[in-house]
Structure formats: structure tokens, C-alpha cells
Amino acid sequence: MKNTRSNKHEPFGFLKKSKIHKQLYTVYILAVLLPVTLIGIFLVGNTLGLLTSYYGDLLESDNLRVRTILFEITTQVYNISEELSFNKEVLSILTGSYASEQDLMEAVNQSASSIDNYLYNYTEIAQLEIYCDNPNFYDYKQYHKVDSTIMETDWYQKASTQASIFWTEMEIIDQYDNQYWNLCLVRKIPLVGSNYNAVLVIRLSDNYLKARINSQEYRICVSVDKGSVFFATDRADYGKPQMVEIDYEQNYFQYTGNREIDHKTCFLNMSTLHLYQSDSRIYICTINDKSYGKIIGIIRICLLIISMALVFPAILIHFFTGYFTKRIGVLRHVMHQASNEDYEFEEIVRGQDEISEAFADLEVMVQKIKEKDARMYEALLNEQALINEQQRMEFKMLASQINPHFLYNTLETIRMKAYTAGDKEAATAIKLLGKSMRYVLENNGTALTKLKSELDHIEIYMKIQKLRFGDKFDYQFQIEDGIDVEACMTLPLLLQPIVENAILHGLEEKESDGLVMICIERVPSVETQTDTCIRISVSDNGCGMDNKAVEQLRGNIEQKNPERKTSIGLYNINQRVKLCYGELYGITIETEQNQGTTIILLLPEKTDRMYSDRK
Image 1 (cartoon, rainbow, N blue to C red):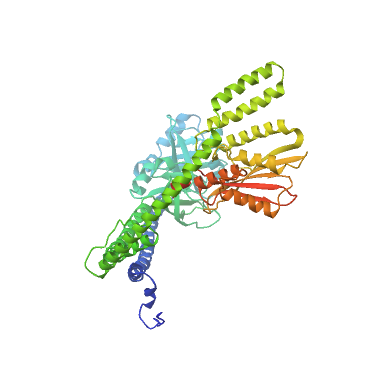
Image 2: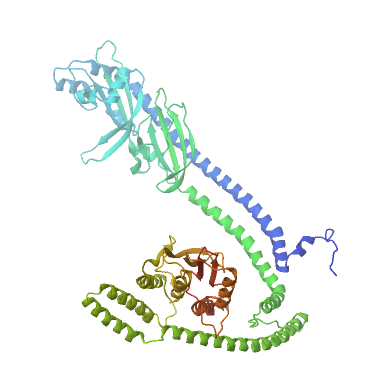
């Protein structure tokens, strides 16, 4: 009697619907896998956020350090420019009139506040230059007369038209074609009461900036206004655009994020420095190309720990489950084998309990079944052996009724004589017959042949029959696109009896306009959903058959009658196909009175394994 009691009040009643090992795995999933996974995701996400924030803060802190140093240096340089711009001796030298270069040299050397002192006392200054368009001026030390080259520079034109100072990067190419960039302060020196213009250029020392700014941990790029990088910890970055596209319309541009630089993911922090008493802005980009790798390493360690926390309990649960369920699983497996008529057990149940006793009873039952099956199988083998031997004998009778070698050689001799005598029609007929016999000779004793070879043989046979019947009939081949008749294999000498039946019987009552159509198409497999079959249809437009004649022909094809003289060829074909490929394949007939007859031959497209192998 079926148990109808409800399990709704029993704890974990839903587990009873699954097998024991699935129940244990379900408990593992609910008690270990889900909690550890959720907690691990939270911890990994939180750790990732903390590490990203930590390295971001360090990067921002270093960016602030660089910004503070640059502000200090630029402010100091601005103060020096203030002193020089309003120095009376400097102004006197710039507005003086000199008859010769010697006069200028004497005036500069007698100056108490020599510009050389600034170069000696301030290591942040690499070069200090004053340009003046006084026509009575010469080049000496830091003083330079403005020539056409200087006058055309952007920085000189800008300085000449504005009173405020500005900063810009300047490029220098030495005698060895090495390029160098420096940050330079440019300002106009007011020459009161004079029509002359003077411009002060203070070039900062790149070495000094490296000594103050360089970092072993971070990569730094510094640019001014819309210019290129004038200072970088990596020499390759000089003269290039900044790593981040800058919005120059913003008064204070700032960016924090990550970018892929040189095929590495890097953290970036960019900030803007407004220079003292100037509209110029310095953009400082600090790059950390190591933090991302460190974060990934830490995350991987966390994931490894979480994985270990999941894997080790899973292994224990696995072996624990196997310990209790292995013997039951073995018993169920051998019972399933027995239910599928597989009696060769590779596993046995050991022990002295109820499970081993059940297995012993199963072995006794299986032994009795095997004895009965052995007797039945022996009888089937004997019967099948007789059928196979009979089919081989019939095939040999069809293919070897005459000596093919002798006949082919004789036909070739007759053909040559006919051709020499001028009877080309007879020569053609003999040639076709010879090709037909060659095909029979080549396939005598072979198991498979190409579908194309079989079709070529049928075409030769058709041509021979047309020589015999003249215009009584014609034939056509239709092959579906995609079917490779060179690759498809079939049994030899299958189609000729079918075509012969269509010509001799299907078109028997037609005097003219007869048509035999041979169609080859691909259809779904009768065995599996993934494979396909080849369907060969041989149709005629003859008078067809009534229901009684059709049923009689189908019976002749399916059942052998030694006394019958007709339909032997179709019977042999049907039996050969079924013996080779199985009962699902073979010949079917479709016909209607006065509508012609179609004989359909169904073959598997893949014939690499015969039916006997699959059994």
C-alpha cells in the first residue's frame, strides 16, 4: 500500500526527496558553501575598497608633497625675479648706451649686485638671462641683445605685451642633439622712462627638481599650462603630453582613477597648482604602477584562503558521503546493469550484512538469466549464420554468374572490331557494357563503394537501356545541394535492380515520353536526432499499381519465397541493407494508379560502422 503520510511537519523533510549523497551535499551547500561564499565576497570587496583607498591616499599625499615643493621653489624664484626686475643697477645697465662691447663689459663687471651671485647662491636656478632690445646693447654674461630669432619666439612676444609674469617650459638641444626641458619664469622688466623692452628669463635646474621631487615609489610627470611634460621621473616622458586629458577650462582640475599605461594598470592622481602672482598653472600627475599588482596579489591570497575554506570541507564531505553510500551505490549500479541486460559485473558488494545478502541473491538470479540467454543467443546465432551464408551465396550468384575478366576482355575486342568496321553505335554500346562489367569486377567482394561510383554505373546502365529502347524513356538525376557523393559510401550494386524494375515494369505500357527520375536528398536520421540519412528515390511516370499489386510487391520484398521468380532483385537489396545497417533501413514503395511508382531506398549517411558492429 502506498504511503500517503505528509512530511510537512518533519524537519528537513524536503531532503527525503533526493538521494543520500545529494542530501549530504545539500547540507554542505546550505551550512558551508553559501555562508562562506557570501562572507568571502563581502570581505574581498571590503578589502579591495580599503586597499584602493589606502593606495589612493598615499598617491594623493605624494602628489601634495610634489605640489608643495614646486610651490616653494617657484615662489622663491618669483622673489628673485622681483629683486632683479627692480634692481637699479640692472635697470641702469639695460637703459645705458654703449659705444662698444667693452663699455658694456665694464658696466656689468662694476655692478655691485652681480647676477652671478644668484646663480651661486640659489641652486634651484640653472640659468638666468635678460634680453633687451636696446640697439646700443651687446651680449655679455647674462645680458643678451634681442635678435630676430628671440623676437619671434612665443614667450618673448607674450612677455613684451603683458606686465604680469608667466611660466612656461623651454626646450634646449645641446651640441650632441640631446633634448632637455626646463621650467622657466618669464617676465617683463619695466624700464621706466625708456622706449626699450627687457625680458627676464629664469630657468629652473632640472637636477635640482629631481633631487627634491624624485620618488622611488611613484612615477611623476609635471607640465605647465597647455604645454608638454617638462619634468618627469622617467626620461622617456619628457616632451610628451600628460597621461590624463586635462580640461583646461576648469579653474582647478583634479583627477583620481586608474589607467592602462605601458600595458600595466596604474593608479593616477592629478592636481593643479596655481603659481604665486601668476596666471600660469602647473599640472602634477603622480602615477603608481605597483599598487594595482599588490592589490591583485592580496585579493588572490584572500580568494585562495576562501577557496581552501570551501574545498577542504568539501573533500571531507565527499569522502564521508562515499563511505556511507558506496556500497548502496554499487548494489544499485549492478541492479541497473542487470535491468539493462548487462550481466558482467565489474564491482561486487562485500560484507556480511543485508546489502551483501541482497547482492548474493542478485547474482543467483543473474546466473539463471545468463544461462537462459546463452541458449537463446546460440539459437539466434545459428539462424543468423544461415541467413548470412544464404545472402552471401545469392550475392555471389548475382555478381559471379560469368567470369568478369574474360567477358570484359572479350567485349573490348568486339568493340574495337565494331569501331574499325565503322559501326560506332555498336562500339558505343559495347563500351558502355564494358564499363558496366568493369564496375561489377572492381566491386566483386567489396563491402562499400562511393555513391558517385554507383551513380556513374547507373548512368551507364541507363545509356545501355536507351540504346535498347530508343526514345521510349529518358532519365534525370537530382542531387540535393550539400551532399558530397564522393564522400558518401554505400553498398555496391544496390540501384541497378531498382532502376531496371522501373524501366521494365514501371514503363512497360509506355511507348514514349517515359521518364525515370533518380533523386538523392538528405533527411533526418531514423536512429538519432543528430545524424542524417540519405534517401534515394527512383520514380517512373508509368501506370502505377493498384492496392492489391502494391501489397503483393511489398510482401515479396519483405519475405523470401524460393519458388518465386519475380522481385528477387528488390528482395536481395532490401535484405542486404537491413543486414548491414539494421531493420530501420531498406526499401519502401509509394504508388498510385495511373500516377507512376516510386521506390525509396533509405541509407545512413555515415556508414563507417556496420550494423553488426553496433550490435
